[in-house]
Image (cartoon, rainbow, N blue to C red; front, top):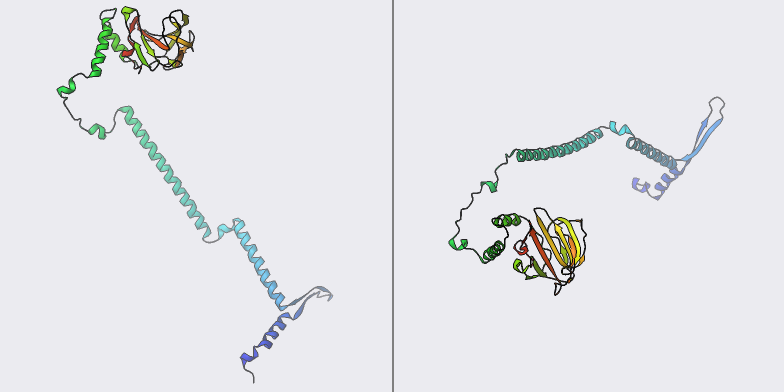
Length: 296
């Protein structure tokens, strides 16, 4: 007699496949007339496949309804995750608003302290100044101080009004002049020789800049000075620029400090080469421009 293991050999599997492939007929008959309404021929394997496909389609439909419709909110645990996410976003936004309010409060406190003068003490204000007494050698005038003193004494010597030189120097020393050009001074102020300005040798096509803001009152041609332009400034100051090749401004124009008003040239009879003759007048008195601006 064959054992159970031997019974499950090739013949046993063939029998199972034969039973799965056996066809059956599903018939729907009208109970009153016994008329056949529907018939379907299936085997066991087809029934198994049809059942699996039916459950798969049913499961997919349920998942689509849950995911694509608001029904997912009724799933236990889903609403808790969304609530926690919203709570986290609200917490982050509240922290950002609190930080912005703190920055605004600090800004207003600092602005209020500045306006009222109640500034807190810092390291600079708490630091004690170190008192260092200068030595006699440090109090001695240097070479630059001596040169400046000599220039002032020279200008005072040619002052036309007594007692006005010191006051005028103080007024002009507080003004920031712009040098018209950069170059070498070949002739300085000498009222005795009727030379009321300085001659500055520079490049032929160098731009002549206005020393201060003002209004052009003269832009003309003279035989001895060539193209001349004169600018009227505030505080009784007047600047004159001579021997220009080209004038860039006309009478009545407003000019700014450092703005180009002419081009250095060699025009006029009283010239021996490209240079600028620059004059600076204060209340009708010619002053030395080199005492208030650096040309080199």
